Image 1 (tube, rainbow, N blue to C red):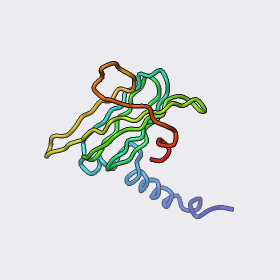
Image 2: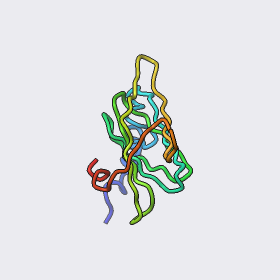
Image 3: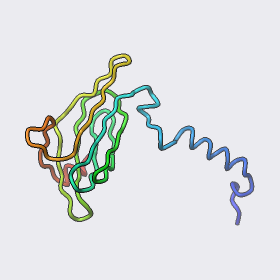
Image 4: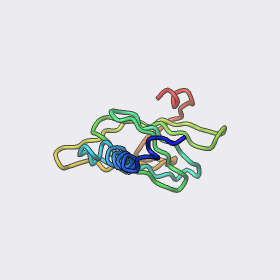
Length: 135
């Protein structure tokens, strides 16, 4: 049985174009709306990490070991929850709140390195699976 998309290649092309224009995964809502604030997560832990950014814009960001991931965000107060490890062997942490500011054409560019650093400039504490999953 053929669907309506098999019979009408123009309709299929039109739906693909619509998806790329409005739902392109390479573009973000924040960037599309003029928010050029960037947060880059740099993973130096030796383990894969899943970062949950919690604030006015809530995002999940996968950051494989020894890699980095960048997101565009709206201004506001944020904190992060991080899950380190692999299935069944996770550890969790929660970072202190931080502020993203944008005034006119001046915007925030923030780098957060995911690893424990003595006397580092971004404090985090141990967290739990329940706290991580609740956000």
